[in-house]
Length: 167
Image (tube, rainbow, N blue to C red; front, side):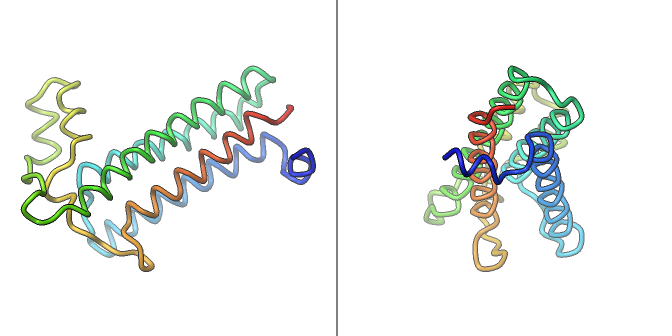
């Protein structure tokens, strides 16, 4: 394991690479939304929030270049955000695997939810997903939430490595 750490870039560079990877993921999401006209469902938006959280934390860590405790704190926070994204992507895949008669009904739009429900309830509705989340859109042969799940698991692994490294 020690040899693995010796070939990795510095912690600061790794955080920069994590931030760049998250930016790339968001650019792909925007391309799918704006150019391919695949409009995001509530679970898609929630997954984006978690990816953005990982990216922002990684960018902060890169700029901050903290000491040992800060490196570990950033790695834990990024790891938690990656786990959150993985959980939501997993739920999204589960909803997509349901038979048509078991798919939750389509709910109100995102703007309506945030305008008419208390914040905590709006977040709860956002995480729950609805019928629009059951539509399977393939990207390079896999459902889009499967790609997000793989990305979140990759981000988690990188942050576990960051956690174990010596600054």
